[in-house]
Amino acid sequence: MTGIRGILLCGGSASRFGSEKLLAPLRGSPLASHAARNLVAGAGNALAVIPMGSAALRRVLEESGCDILETSDTKRGMGASLAAAAAASSEAAGWIVALGDMPFIRVATIASIRVALEGGALVVAPVVVSSGARGHPVGFASALKAELVALDGDHGARSVIERHRDRLATLEVDDPGILADIDVPADLEKFR
Image 1 (cartoon, one colour):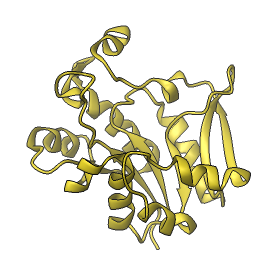
Image 2 (cartoon, helix red, strand yellow):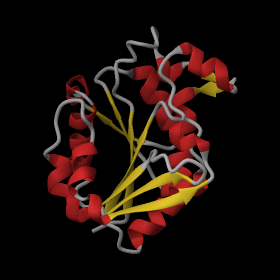
Image 3 (cartoon, one colour):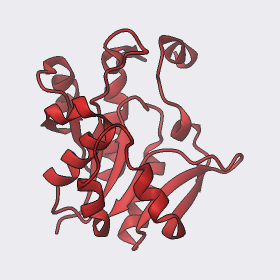
């Protein structure tokens, strides 16, 4: 079994954004590159899940330090993308699942999730100290591999988290980035 594997989900259609969201410029580089570099720095590695034929996105993510999983499963949604990534890295000791459209999560937050998993947490998620709001990324121990690989559709891992709510470890962080996802161009303008 290897160490904790970072997974960066980059397979969404970005229909609300109206263009190639993950390649939109943010502070001098594509949006997805920020999320990728933060995950690589905090988790120590990242496997980015992208749609088939996404050459420009692949290049950006590879330049940011990611390994790439190109799969048609992204068409079926976030759950299917996560299942493909978990299956492709089944030897991992656990996973930190991050989203390509969340570029502001601090490296220290991601590293704290990795440390919690290494310390034996089954499921771990960050929460904002001031509000108690739970955000991303979420960590999953290897004991949950079968449940992650069985995911499908667009529901992500919420069902896995709910099934193990009694074992969910929360990390209080002062990191607004855990809640800041980019859905529409106005979201990007807020942070420029």
